Length: 115
Length: 109
Image (cartoon, rainbow over all chains, first blue to last red; front, side):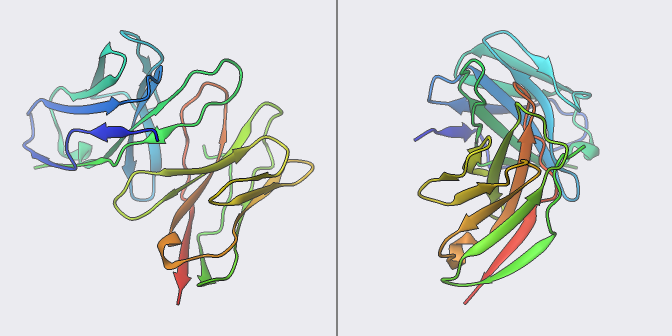
């Protein structure tokens, strides 16, 4: 079974703090993704990575950065947390399989509250 | 923009088949149809996906119309634990998942 783990299920931070959300997958997947999920807005893609040290902006990258130093780990960084970044953050990973569509597997999510 | 349209909510009796429809009239030839579900406060769980043929696995069946403009996810014997939000997604190759609002399925005893 694919396992995607996230460092925290719940997190409370103050405005202006630097926040690190960690994601680890154990299936040697090349691709990793960070999403946020908000009521009425569905899942929105923040950043993704197709390989170590590579990153691509998703639909809503503003206010976020990412780091992929090792294949199994993909970190999401909130440089200076703001209240509008209060959300559920979901990490996903998938295998690169050439032209066929790869299935993404999700972690349990981190519910972040910024006060 | 979500490329799919799903009903907002549905009910199903426990033990009965749950049939969840999805419209994707603008689907292109190389796009797959994916289904995920999300139980409250958990990450989305992969269910099944397909291109044009019907698919079946241990969780569900996926029926795709011949013109590929719509599909139906079938849970053959729904249980209370199948209560969740079900998402139908059409994906561009190599792109992230774009989830819409999904269908909230409530399985009732």
